[in-house]
Length: 324
Length: 277
Image (cartoon, rainbow over all chains, first blue to last red; front, top):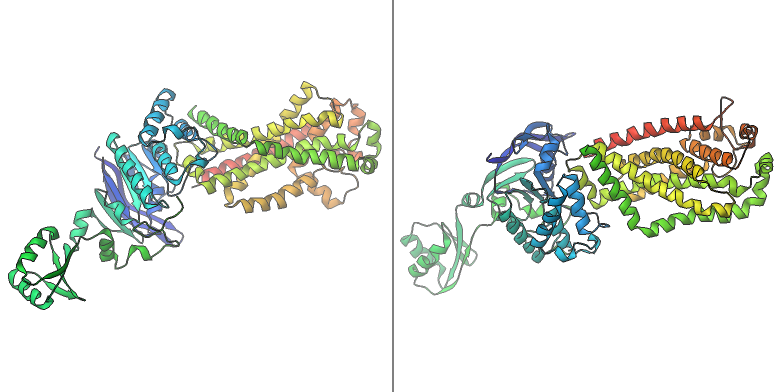
């Protein structure tokens, strides 16, 4: 079984609104699959269908070979979920939250104890496990939810905006833990996010906009569509430099403000070549590798941070999230 | 079997949460306490007359009201269990339960029985006021009352869960308490004898399921107090019982009506859990 998720022509309507519009994709065993799009693009709806909470209007989805609509209970045993917003019982301790989850997923009691010890050790929560989760910080809650989603050894872990509302430092920690945990579990990850830097960790990414998948590929391939890296160069005499560059290399050189812009493959290898070819003094030179921001802009003609959002959480840099 | 186990763990969480909120336990004893001490003592002399011939039965206002207070506790606590549905929705914990490989009937059953258990504990605690009221408690009386309030609380927790499943805010739930639960309480005979009341009020009392819980618990208390069958027959004349088509509603009829209500409300609640997404 190489495909853990198979989605074909999935469509979901809410009245007149088509939230998900005939999407198809596959997620392979062991990969991190990114699902990138602005708020309201259909990400959460897709997750809700894949977890059997919503019935699709049309299309099929299978998780580890089982049809979600036909065998929702079997499918649910195979998946773990970390929700966009906290889903802990704050009046219960961390251990009680984990234990409640184990019982619901029929984890045998003798295994449950070891599993809880092991997982909480790995995310550094062992010594806080008997405290009520209302006393946890935002990052601790996320870590607890993360390992809760793994207790029953799921095949697929759904991470729905797993670092929403966390400060950048905590986000990085959470990602370290996710990658650490993934090493030791036989796990595929379905990740939805609108943080560009988070999909950089995914093997493949689907870009979703207005309910449709508008691109699906590896990050590198998506970036390659942009035609390569950008090098910005400023010299004592831009015009002279431009001429010598165009003479020496088969390159298109554009003038942007006080700088020269070159679109090249493997920009880091070009920089030494360029500096040798130019006799003028170089004032500045810098390399801009395309980001997922650029990819999204290229694909949709708009920036992800400026649309469909009611809040300011869509900043890809993550600097605006305070309440951890 | 698995479904039963799931129901049990969900039940356990409800009870554990109740146990964690000890202030809620004490707090919820305050209202019955005020009713009995302030209303009971303050109104005993003036309302004593309203009890009419029943006064001759050795009945005073506190004794009259005590079964109503037990009923009130069952009603309020049971319906409030719907608030925990709203709270779980807002805190996101409901999602954790809804995506688990658990049949919805186990979720509904566990929550409803959990709410009933809490209501039963609350109602049982009220027996500590019995000596103050002048009612002697026997194990058999407690057992009978338990049976009745269990039936009642299953119906009312079902109602609470049903309402909770439809609402998104605790404020909305507060409205329900004001516009549904308070009238149910006041128009049931829990608080004052149903004597010489207007026809519209008498009609509401008869369709109010809570009336039958109060009536049955009260009759159990009266029997335990040694009321003769003639005295029991004359209860409706004194505003202490309910008649339907000129027939006195007996405990068995109360149980029948309550069972009917409980089943219907239970059905609604289970259905609403099935519809949750």
